Image 1 (spheres, rainbow, N blue to C red):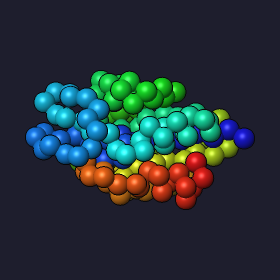
Image 2: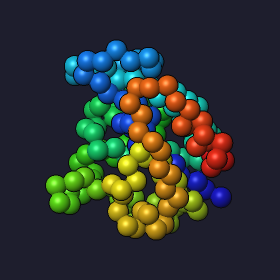
Image 3: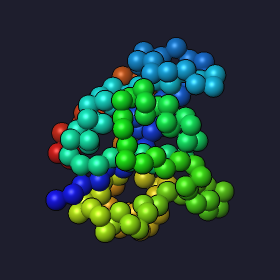
Image 4: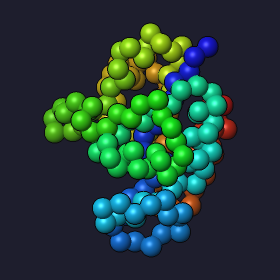
Length: 150
């Protein structure tokens, strides 16, 4: 059984701040921002990669996503970024490319904003919404791993 895990970055695995000093682990500095790592982000990434293939789908720019993935030691099959999103009513909309539905038995999406995914992705994938990470100490990703048997 082939499984694909699609992960969002901002507010799901990381948090970018322009000036706050937060208790979270600093992952990197990028373009004037401090990027913080969410607790258990690496554990979730490792679990996803052990169970199948992983891709990143973010509304951020590709260069930023590549740097974050490198620092998280995440080697996704592919990175989808802002230019891969559709713009509908001035909002970015994410959509799982159709060819993945033929390649995988199950597709799981983990995102703090499930509403940015199109109807097809909601209907054909297991979409797990997580509370947004804002640099605080939380165990949301640990709960996701335990609840959803990733």
